Length: 482
Image (cartoon, rainbow, N blue to C red; front, side):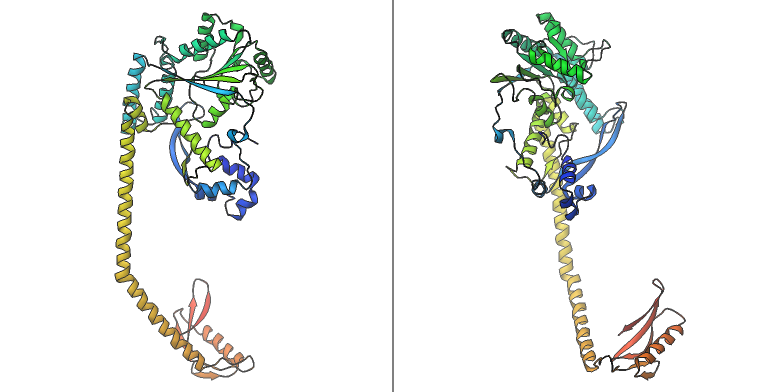
C-alpha cells in the first residue's frame, strides 16, 4: 500500500507494473522500458542542476504521456485505488488560510531583473552553464520566500513571509497554551547551515523567542540525526514539550507521526511535487489527532512566483487524480517531474500580465496548426498524384500480371504433373528425359558447366521454359520456370 504511487514521475508506474504485472507486460511486449516508454511517453532533453550543485547538466526526461486509459486499464488489473474522499477516514477537518503578502520595493526590483535574465537566456546571450531557466526559477522561489535569500545585506521586510508566519504561530501558541497544542512549519528552501549565514529557520526561531516563546519549545527536525534522536524529539512533540517543529518536506514528511496535539501547519514555500504537498498535510490531517479541526496556512508573496507555483502543483495533482481515479479520462498528460518555469511563464509573472503567457501559448498553437495544415495539404497533393499517375500504372501492371497468371494456369493444366511413379518428363539441353533420376543428373551437369552467374535457358518442363542462374550472395544455383 502507498499514499503516493506517483510522486515524481509517471515513469514510477512502470516500476510498479514490472514488480506486480511482469507476465502481463511480457505478453504485451512491454517488459523492456524502451518499448513501454515508446508506447506511453514522449521525451525531451532539458537543463537541470547537477547533483553535486556545482553546475548544470542536460537530462532527458519524460515531457508527456499518451494512451493513458489503456495504461491505467493495465495497472488497475493489479491496483485497487482508494482516495481519501472514498474512504471517509476519521481525520480532523482542515480549515485553509491563504496569507497573501505585499512584496517589498527590493523584491519588485529583483523580479524585474529576473525577467531581463530570462530574456537573455531565451536569446542565447548567456551560456547555459552561467544562467538558465532553472537557475532563474530557483532564484524566483528564493525571492518569494525572503529577499535576504538573494542578498543577506538587504533589510528584513515587515511584510515578509517569516514575519507573518511568526505572528500566526505565536497567536496560536498563546491561544492553545492550556492544551499545549503543537504546530509544524515547512520550509524546503532555507535550511539551517550552522555557519552564521542567513536562513529562514533561525530567523523564524529568533522572532518567536522575541515574542515570548521559550527556546526549548522550538525545535528543528534537522537536530535529530539518528533514529533514537528522532524518537525522542517526536515524543516531545506528541506530549507538547516541543510546541513548534520546523523542518523540510524531505526530513519531516513521510514517517513523521506527531499528530496527537497538532493544531496548525504552515507552508512557508511551495514544493514542486503534488505528493510533497500531500505528505506535508498528511502529518496533520491524520488519524490519531485529538483536535476535531486543524488550521493550514499557506503564505504567498504577491507578484512573485508563489501563486503560480501553487497553481501549477494544484493542476498537476488534478491530472494525477484524473488519471488514477479515471473520473475524467484523459488520453494524454504532462509529466509532473518539471522543475523549471518556461520563458513565457517567467515573463508573465515578472510583468504581472497573465496575457503574455496566453499570447505566447496561442502563438505556439498557431505555428503548430500551420504545420499541421501544411502536412495535410502535402498529403492531399500526394494522394492526387497517386490517383492520377501512380495508381493507374499499378492497376495496369497488376492486370497484366493477372493475364500472365491465367496463361500460366492454362499451360500447367495442359501439362499435368503425373504421380510419383510416372514422371511427366523434362527437356534439358535439347534432350528429353522420361526418368526423374536422369533428369536430375542432367541438371547437375548443366550447373557444373556454367561459366558465369547470368541466367541461361537450359530446357523445358510442363510447358514452361527453365532458366538456370547462380546466386553469388547465397552461393546457390536456381532454376526458374518462365
